Image 1 (cartoon, rainbow over the protein chains, first blue to last red):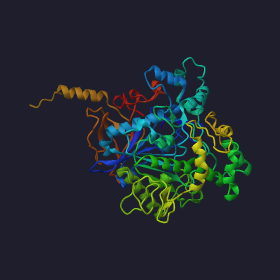
Image 2: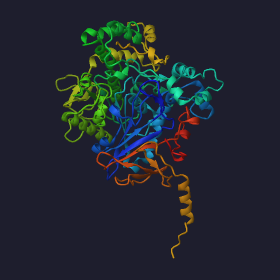
Image 3: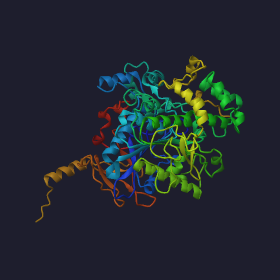
Image 4: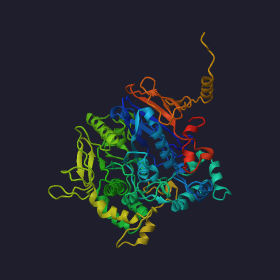
Length: 511
Length: 109
């Protein structure tokens, strides 16, 4: 695995010589579609050898889906994403792009090129490569989808559980915040040759001193940067311009993405009302927080934790997903599909109580129940095993043809299409025979499957979309339009200026 | 009488192969790139569930039979780029850096 901290937050593990991939090749008589998986972990942890709830053992998926499965490693943390002016200058002097950062994305591109050259040897069809990723891996997939460097390297895209696809930061801003902080923390700020100094620091020291932010209200420190080479604008902005790689596109995730003890607050932490308010004000500032707290009053939820989960899931995942689905659907003729995973695990009870938390669907996609989930080992019911096979069917059909539909599977409607008049088109505001809007259509993964439309669309359209639309300035900061003070809004949004994870966690665990 | 001498071409190839013999055993199940290949980028399909051996543009990769049904092959830890350690750390993603798959000097974990 690439250098990273263990879950204890202290111990460094991994080796920089980590750029490898795993291939799972089923029996084949003709070239098979390829599923290219980019793992999550905030772009600073995890690997293609992960075990447990996020196991990436692709054997079952490969065999039951008749697809070649590729799972990659890529550079993580500061080693994979650091941008700094000294590195830009070094690149320029070497005749390069005069940019820095995005090394993780460039690794992913290198892996995709390797797949193009070699996957036929494993039984794969290089013309039918589907890229997919989860969490930060899904954010990376979004960047590849939007990147000119991704052109011709994949035939379809599936974004799973990736949020904040409108918050990518411009290179100069990233360098001024994250770059300066990392270089300072590594003791290289005053070095005569900063780049050389950075290369002299042991990798273990780097990962121990530069842990990035990743919590319910923030996108994460280490992510794709708008550098004018890999990425020309935010993923959402690129999609609005129609400048993405025009391939069939799926986006979705869990209905309670933020219900994850790794997402910024402990599983059993029930914040006080004061803590809840303080966290929102810290993240969003005045006066947006007043609106947010009015939209998500704790009185409407079982606990303040549930209020935060609802708020964060809408803000970080669900609404950005519908924004991007809408933008892509309106700017390309290739079909767009959306899904919402709503299934709560049948057992153990502590998992059931979380609902469809962040990453749970991976157990179904990789059929990895036996490895145990975040909340202990799950013994899947027959219905859950069926759901797993159904998801594998949709995933692999999409990889094979660009259309997840086929056979006797419940029809997954093209995004925005009239449920009574399916077909490939891009009419977002389609209506059904009764004249009702059928926008924001999705397939609901649960037991049983269902078709739906308008998941949380009201709060998205009336609040979060407006907020995001006016914060889409490519700088990771925000303002809200209309009667809200723009300056206050800009100051309110959290940036990555501070890498200290401990003072950015919005909720202090209680007991 | 059969000539047991190694023919020049064969000797040359064998020597090169031996010189570049690479064992990719980083952990159980890791794929092994056994030798550099003289096949082109569009390597032919030569995998099967029995041998789990394929030829790619950097050499022959040895995988293992899958553990579920034994019908699939698993190749773990196949390098796709040069090590980013040392001088490769924090180097921009130019083609020069990331198109070195054929030149991975010693594939190791």
